[in-house]
Image 1 (spheres, rainbow, N blue to C red):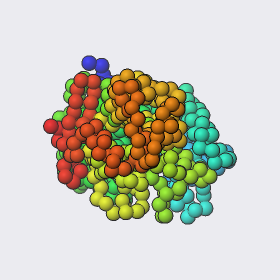
Image 2: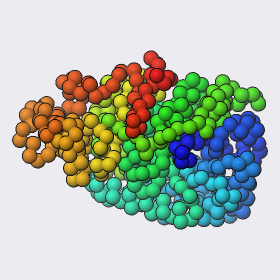
Image 3: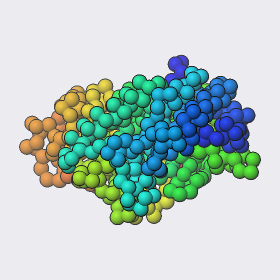
Image 4: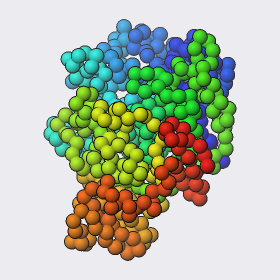
Length: 507
């Protein structure tokens, strides 16, 4: 079995914990030795550069002595505008007031000095892009507005996407040229996974937190499958301003889900709830229990073997449901000139339908301030081998699907042709608005719902992806209302969801 099929388990720690051998580090990684790797937070800008380099080398040495890899995580730049070191090294500010992480080549070389650096992680990178470094803006009471990258000057969503793709490719390329073996973000919101993957940035989804874990997986996993990347997962114990904001049992189930879902690396954020007064808490006990049960456990598949049966296809314009009156501004890609519209919302309606109406109609997480904000969080919703792809998906990524949803502004010719072939030759069903119907079928679309035969399968043309008539028609594709079903080739994983949506059980 190749190494990448055997999932690696990690823990989020902070650089002072490593050098100081604090309890959270010592009990769960150091002396306990239960994890494969660590995600280590660095905060180097407060020290002279030579001292920061020494810290980086020390961390590499400590983990090398433990026989462990580590991922270097950077989050400090998301909260402070002035990230200049005492001796003038610039860690975040760029010309024109732009603000994004800068990691000097010498620092990456220090991190990699023992050969056990697994990657660089830009914490919540997509959050900073789509919300224009909102934490810095809030801290300055609105005085400082600092986009991550330069934005296009008009309201053209395609031009903005193309510009961001160019910027991300250059950014990722520079970090790798400076010695980063891999680069990932850490996605609060279920967006930009596909664009990141296209630019060489590993999809790394948060579960728990304010997310629905298996929807995050369906989107991030679709990106990994489509673009041939690994899939990483941060099981985040925060919920809004509370850590831990989830039960120990929910933590365990989210870690367990990562194993069954073919994730390549999973880690828990953070070590803080796991130890209190030098004693392991119930959270630490559950984490250690999980590591002992699943670390090194044989698994003959990973995300590259995922064979989704339901595929939602759309251009990822960074819309997840933002637009509440308090926090999340109504803009796409962080550009205030580009607003979400009905095309942006279509895939959210499609996902609501394929989850038996359990996901929200107006968004995909508990972040959005509104009625959903008052609904009790749950990690898991019913799902039958769902993957979400962008508008460039090809035949190989789509070939296992039995049900398609074609959503959003644009579907590429390659994707449209692949779907049509799978409908006509394999008997698949494709749900779409009139916009994405094959040209020769458009004249047959009538009213709000029309099913049009096409070879062995059919297209269903709708105006509402949540209509009761559509739900009734596609019900046989959706699986059971209390299950998550995942298919990897001939292997089928069935997970029963608890009534409160916090835990799962393999059945």
